Length: 301
Length: 321
Image (cartoon, rainbow over the protein chains, first blue to last red):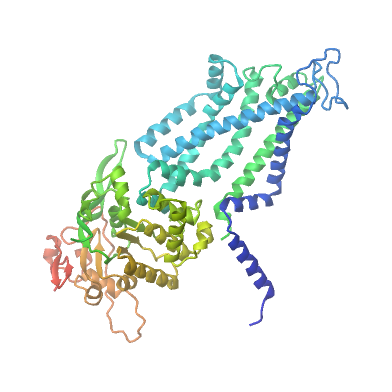
């Protein structure tokens, strides 16, 4: 039989691969790295984070200093994105706004993640009557017009940003709970869960160690899709005047202001809207990429 | 005293329907089964698909709540235990699963999968001892101890089944329920796993309840064989006797269906007519009578009980000699 050097080399490489021992997460990362669109999204988000959370401390112009003599000006070397009607620098307002929008998006997603994953996992694992009751509660909450629910809560309590995070998160967990419940119900029939029961593990440990880690793939993906959803909701609330109050800004309030003056000063709408859409696109691409990367069926065999 | 004594075990699944979830029938998956397993013995459990053999294994493991009956392990009825008491007893009986691809948590390393068994029952005093135990167990099942850091998807089916065996062995159980442990594996790998199970039994004196539909495998590994049909035991006896001189007509038909390699084989194939009856409405009298080639009038009315036909060999048939 003729020797096939290429094949032997390939086998050697494969063996080295096996020796290294790759975790599922590392595999997933390798697959994600191959997805150019998702990586572009991730890089953009990383730069955006740096810009929003670091730049404001590097002596750029204040987002709240008004200059009435200046008024609205076109983008220039001094004011990169121009100034708004009160003569405030739009560049720093967009960055500060991004800080609020991103924090609301992420914090509310984390809140919804924690509630949704635990609720869904408990409901799905125990099943039966408990599951019935828990899911009917979700259905009822789902049936409430949630923007009105958020507005009510915002009116009842003070309009603090922290509260905004919590309220939005407390409303957004419903979908997460349903997704995790479905996953857990499918996992419950798997033999490794039965093995865990047969070993004598407590239910809490089975849920935390065996169920939830195996739903994480889908949870991560759904979370990246929730962040833009929440940012939209925050923009909508701010647009209605329930969100962030001036002189603070969020992308929602900036777009609101810009939209009002769109015909005279289009740059006031253009720049915040550009950042907002670019962020939403990046998050969606990253979410898509993560979904593909974490799909176990696509993993090497 | 036998290690495991199962008495009149029943597992019925209610069939509910309608808004009020009224139970109007039940599937009698396991119906009044009694048997025992001695210390260090292997009892093979055979039967065709849907005869209740897997359900019986799961009921003994308390993965399925039995409807009635008792499961006495080491002098204690585990069918009645629950909660913390049951969890503590689970050290004594473990299970090896059918599907090696589904039975290991894909997000845990092999070391953690085996280590979890040790953690739960506090079998390792410290981290060093835990590592040492994990490595010993991996060596015992024929795997490289260096593999503890790897994830299940990096192993082949046979290797995964070895990991599953190591997990079960970690708590030093007295009884292992093997639910078709080799039916998902290649024939050559099957032999390796069977030999491993036999070696481990010799070293550790663990008893197996070996569930399978493969008679050749069961004959090889078991001291005694139990045959189930429609949720009932039809025959139980020493492995050689059950395979070479089966007493119950169902066992005879089952054994005649095993393919043989000898071309000159004179063996007659008994072909059963009809389908397996539904376990919701099992036939009256002997559950096998509609398909039995030698059934008589009384088989339709009288339920046969297990009786000793020859030394240690019991069959539930009116006509068996």
